[in-house]
Length: 362
Image (cartoon, rainbow, N blue to C red):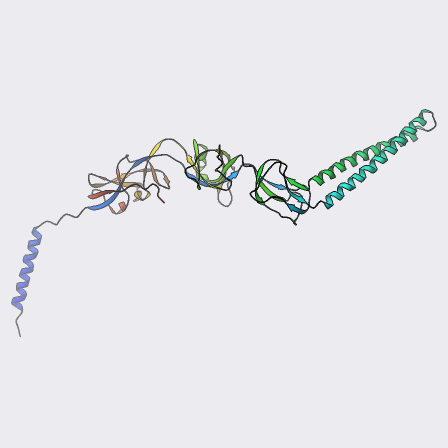
C-alpha cells in the first residue's frame, strides 16, 4: 500500500510558504468608479405650468322665448353668424293664429269703445238739458271708461301676440360663432330650452384649473406666458381675469380664466394652450431630479471635487418638469453626480464623465 505521508507534508510546506509570501505584500488599491456629472446652472425662476383650453369670454345658449315645434334649423356648428341673422324657426301656424285672435279682440274692443263714447256724449247733452238724471249719465260714463280700459288691454295683448309671432325666429344680437347645436328640426322645445350655443370670438381666454397650493403664486404672478400646443413658437401674454372663489368638489381645484392680450388670428376656439406662471425674474440653480437624494437628514446632492465625492446638503425650492430648483447649498458650476449617487460615500475616488444637459426631462 503506497505511503502518501511524505507527499502531503511537502504540499503543506509549499502552501505555508505561499501564504507567507502573500502576507508580506500590500493589497492593490481599488479602481476608481466612473460617474456621470453635470454642471449646476442658473435658470430663470418660474412657477407652475398649466394646460387649458381656448374659450370665448362671452358664450351663451340661445333659446326661443316661446315653445313650439322647430320647423327649420338654418346654421350648423362652426358657422360664423351676423347680428340679426335668422338661425332657426318654429312652426308658425299656432303663433299666427294667436296673433290673428289678438287682432280680432282689438277690433272688437275698438268698436265697443266707439259705441260707449257716443253714448256718453249723447247723455252729456241730455244731462245739460235736464232730460236725464246724473245717475244715468254716470252709468254711461263708467261704461265708456270700462270700454277704454278693455281697448288698452286688447292693444297690449295684440302687441304681445305680435312679439310672440316674431319670437318664432331665433337670432343673435351680436356677431358670433356657433359652437354647438343642441336641438334640431322636428323637435318640440319649450320656452327657454337651449337650441344653439354661440360664442363671441373677439375676446379669447384660457380656462385652467389651479390647485389650492398654487393660488398665492398665481395671484402674485408678475407675468403669464401663454403658448399653443399647435404652435409652441407663438408667444402670447395673458392676465388673470377671473378666479373661482370655491373649489370644484370633484377635482378640488379652482377654475381660473386667463385673458389673452391681443390674440392673433391663429388662436382659435377649442385649441389646447399652456399657461406658464412667472413668479419672479430672479435666477436659481437647476439640477436633474435624479441628483437629489435623502438619507434621512434632508435632501442633498453629491458633487465631484478634486476627484473625490463630496456631499452638499441643499434646499429645494420646487420640483419642476425639467429638474429641481435649489434655493441654497450649491454653487453654480459645481459638478453634480446625476446617477447612482446613493451608492457612493464621501471621499471615494471617482472619475467624472460630463454629460450634456437635456433640454427637457420627462
